[in-house]
Image (cartoon, rainbow, N blue to C red):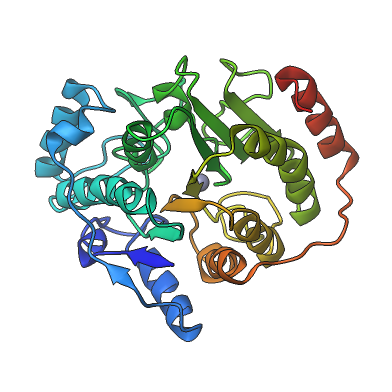
Length: 323
Ligand SMILES: [Zn+2]
């Protein structure tokens, strides 16, 4: 594993309490250090404005740059400060840098970035979301655009508890981008219904209180056939850990089991995992489990999904003609 991290990611900070704050990265670092995982740390490259323009509209980029000078909330959820511009450019560049290194180096490339990105659409708010959801630029979208230089099809798996509406919007109608998004349906940002698709955007819209067995069942039935079909060399992950039980912003009940399983299932691929959400225990326990699953492997016996999740998967199989 290689960790891509820079202290500049601590400079994006709120004036007062906010769940998306620099302490998140300190939680990760402490948990990694305790497990001997804080090594192979790479200094990420900073993006240029022209890199942002491959994903975002020029007016939006200028809006963010101006907003950072004014230090304020840009909507009800999302703040900026003067240093946010450098943090956001480095987060975006970091995701691209990971792809450059991952193409010829099968390994887990972990971008420990802030601010997060998957809610940011081309021009900002995506699919009628109420806000940017703590995101400024869509880091994983930068990674997708870079990966498209090397591959005909790109797979993005987003297991953050919230729907990656920005990523979906940016690549809507780009059928070469296969975006599989696991999320709790019915919470922020409101999009991501099962039926919402352009053909290659796959919304694993799960009910409240879904657990490890539900997620693992859905992964086996939805993700595995797609990976078997596409046979990617590289898989991009929008890695949020806020579906961990009691992480704070949602009702899902994941434990280390799902994250270790997910890491383990991606061992055959080069993986670029870009940090999205995760606010407390998910970062402390879910993220290390994902990394250890990738490094060491992790076996799961048969799982028993809830009746609701069984139905969700059945519908997805019909919608996307899986197997
Ligand atoms: Zn989230």
